[in-house]
Structure formats: C-alpha cells, structure tokens
Image (tube, rainbow, N blue to C red):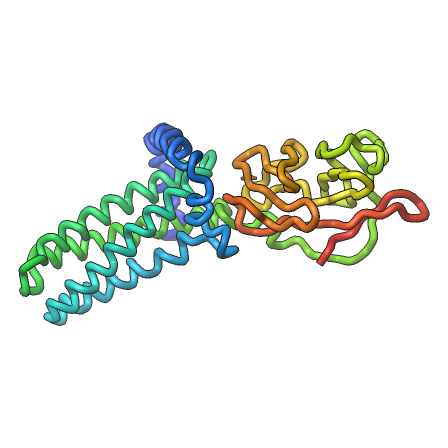
Length: 288
Ligand code: FES
C-alpha cells in the first residue's frame, strides 16, 4: 500500500530531522518568546482556528493554476499566478514557523521534514519566478522549475497533513468530549474540601473519568478540565495569572471563570465546569 511506503520513507528521515528540529526549535523559541501577541496572531488564536492551514491552500492552488496557464501558453497569467503563490507561500512559512516553535517530540521531527521540503519547493518556484521577470515566453526552464517545485511542495504538504491527522498537532484535545449536564461526584486529590483549598493555587480533582483542575478564588470554586486543549499539558501544574490559568508547557492562558482562551498557542477554549456542594458531597458538571 502506497501509504505505508510513504510513512516508512518519512520515518526514515528521523535520524537527521530530530537534531535539526531541536536546533531550529531553540532559535524559534528565542525569536517568538518576546513577541507573544504577534505569535498568537500567527497561530490563529484570534480566529479560533489554526491560521497556517487556512493560508496554505492559496499557494498550492495558485502554483497549480500557474502550471496550467504556462502549459496553455498564457505567459502573463502564469506570471501573475506565480507572484500570488509566492507571496502566499511566504505567509504560509511565517505562520508555519509559529506553530513549529511549539511542536514537541515526533511532531517536531516530522514538522522539520515538512518544513525543509517546503523550503526546497519554495526555492525552486522562486527561481522560476525570477526567470519569468521580463520574459514573456512560456515553457522551458521556468516551467520545469515550477513543475518540480510544485511536486516537492505537494510531497511536503503530505508530510504536513500527517502532523494533523497522525500526530494531532493543533487539534483540540477535547474534540470528542461530550458535554453532559449530569452532576457527578467530585473528589479532590488529597481529599481536601474544595472550599478549603489554598486560594489561587491549582489543585487536581477527579470527576468520573475526567481530571479537573480546581482553583478557589474567595468563595468561588473555578473548575476547568485538567488537560490543556493545545497539547495535553496538565493545567494543575500551571499557575494563576491575571484571572487565568496558565499552562506550564507552552504558556497558553484560559480564563478561570469560563475556560475561554485568552493567550495562545491554544486555539480552543478549555471545557469549564460548575461546582456545588450537593446533599452527598461536592459535585460538578460541564458548563455549556
Ligand atoms: S500544552 Fe501547549 S499550551 Fe498547554
């Protein structure tokens, strides 16, 4: 099966891609850390959807259009399509780097292969664009470079698709969690009553099969799911800051009162719960 062959081929790149990815990641973290609001913009936190895959369709589609127009002998149209594709390609690279900076483990390794292939494809198509400037002919070397570049970009897109569909990168960790309105018995980790928890100190609690994080703020008990929607960090190991719970892994922040994401790289809200003291003890249920 061709899928297995491609996966074996991609897996075979791990030896060089892992150290390269780790080195690039250190640089990207240093670049993006001081400019978090810009990084949130690039991640797509404001959109509630990853921005990178929303943009990548543009260059791939425009490169394909350029190929068709070039083969059809429409030189100006092919030139314009390559220009549009190359600009959108640049935007894809920038948004992709923002996502890449938070990728860990095998996701990072596969993202390294994806990114490097994209850069090779992008260089080939850029060379094709340069050869088209002031040249009204079609076919020849610009077409060959565009064709090869396009094929490399498609291969890179395959590896990029794996990041989402195989590794679950930038996918909500709560995508398949049902809401449910039943009150369920709540058990704190050390048996401490929720209203006796130290103020503004996250504490883990069990709610049926789910782990929650509780934060007492005065008489109010805030409760969110413990698993960070971004990449499954444990929020109970995080800290409270500005009315939010901050994930210890990549620093996403969720509003304590309703789980709304206020800082990336998370894109999705965190499931929130309401807590009450019932007749037989403390209980909680999902809100919304
Ligand atoms: S796991 Fe990435 S911000 Fe929580």
